[in-house]
Amino acid sequence: MKRRPCELFVLIVFLFVLTIGVSGAQAAPKVVASILPIHSLVASVMDGVGKPTLLLKGNASPHTFSLKPSQARLLSQADAVFWVAHDIEAFLEKPMETLAKKGVSVELGGTKGLTLLKYREGGAWEEESHDNHKKGHDDKHAKHDGHDDHEKKHGDKHAKHDDHDDHAGHAHGEHDMHIWLDPQNARIITLAIAEKLKTIDPANAAIYEANAKRLAGRLNTLSEKLKTKLSPIKSAPFFVFHDAYQYLEKRYGLNGVGSITVSPERKPGAKRVRELRAKIKKSRVDCVFSEPQFEPAIVRSLVADSNAKSGVLDPLGFGIKPGPNGYFELMEKMANSLARCLAA
Image 1 (tube, rainbow, N blue to C red):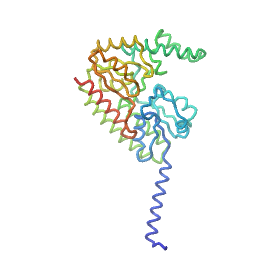
Image 2: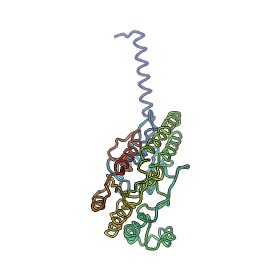
Image 3: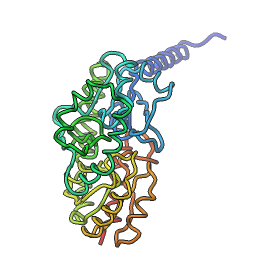
């Protein structure tokens, strides 16, 4: 059947547009993000170009996670892998050295301009170190007697602290790396993500830059919204499951007075539980928060003979659909949980 010139022209245009669409999809960089809040920021910056892959899904915790072979392949094929730091995703440190191509790893905890807070000591934060982490630390070193370099590297720190290891569960580094729980840090991270994507995919640099600018504005609006939501409960004392929330507390002036554990994969001992019960009563704690990734039985036990209520805080976004809005849902969900449990 012979086609008329106008039909032939329309067909050519259609095939051309289709080809452009396919080539554009193929040109999108292969990007991996470790945890949902970081994935959300990356997805926002990549909107209109491609979609990043999320490593930790469901209720997986980065503190106890192990890579699957399929995920290792993703890392080996990636153009960029966005993660926070060893203290959060220890499981990624070696794969980043052995699997990923040179220049692919983007450790966002080292981004210039971030507000960084040191690990907390004193009061309920320090007591946990004495009771809980000393055992875990000693067991670890009993298995690695021959690691003289490790001992030398950390010798000064242990000499200062004698019988306790303040943050064995957080590996190394003096700063708390739950940096995304401050929306202003998230804004700085967003700019770093955009710069990396512009480097590996200059053809779409204008899109990344525009998306990052738009996202930064949304983050500023979110911060103001959280400030309004949390302002009425600023003085209410509360306990958290593990010491992960000080960026949120500092930004909005909240009154966190202690944590059940510094390292969430280790359960507190009997002595620690007794001390926590005493602290909860003495501080007239209004709420003790568990996390969905870990067994909440200890929280129920702690509040059983006190006036404190129990709630749930989730710094990772369990149950939230991955994507550009994930970070905003996570932060608003936490603010709602705090407001609901701490309201007079």
